[in-house]
Image (cartoon, helix red, strand yellow):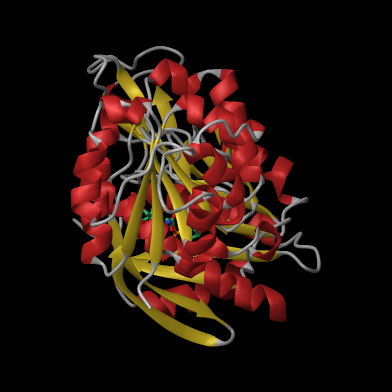
Length: 402
Ligand code: PMT
């Protein structure tokens, strides 16, 4: 049976992208029906969606037709209801349970299979009202597909651009959309994740660091959030936006990262240490810029001292029921070194990845071995979002047996 998707289109400039979505879902074997708000019809004609889907795109609960109660029939027939683009107004109505047109009545009736892909101006997106509405939807198990950042149709730059069509379609096709919130694998669990590099200052203009972009750790935090967890992300300096629905603590140095992790570790069920923490820092931090010539000696020979090992420190205080996942960034003998780290750092599982030029750091994808006392599992190269979901899936399986 083809997967049946009800596509809800609300009124914003990104409505034209719903045509691409519809086509992509059809390409992936879905049967798609379209419901639109009246405002959406100002951007794209219902005839366009009717022609593309091969069935009437509906707008009005009371239109003459064979179907006297369309919203109930549409909700009952669909495997997932995707509202994309979802405007601030429609998100607010769904959050409040307001059902005053065909799209929002469908949303109420299909509340347990609902996904929304917000698209709006950055200021509207960042307004406390919209934040609260999207948080309320998430807390009810509605999958909120985070918008991207960039240049917006209104001329502003920031977060609010409709997510990539292929990411939205993949989310709509994920069978987990139908899982009630309490059945999500990490519902009711607390997860702490570290991400990004640390920077260790020598003077106000120089520091020791590494090329971590934070992509891996942020992907783990988002995957944990999507699996229903209450997530705290402790991140070194990166240029990524705070993921929605995740508590983010920004730090700079390894000592600051340790302090933040100590604050959040005790209450968490799973801790994932994906950050690339500097092992050493300069012994002295000058308050003024060190000058070539004048301070030549201090610059030519920098004395370093060891940083605290955050993973080892916290794993040593692990309470029964807590599950600790470390990473191992290696250039060679990846699995052997990861095994050593599993023991020496006291982790329950280590994600071993090869790093080097164009490998591991900064890339959008990665390959890894998941190493634990139960053996090692090879995960081939895939996008970091997918890798993160796999890491958590295996962590959850191990977590249940530990
Ligand atoms: O951020 P990206 O650009 O997406 O890149 C991802 C990544 C390559 C950074 C990630 O996949 C990764 O490998 N993270 C761990 C990097 C690292 O520091 O590895 P390590 O082998 O040096 O450390 C082993 C473990 O100990 C890690 O979990 C690390 O967080 C932890 N550690 C290390 C040193 C230290 N002082 N404290 C720690 O907690």
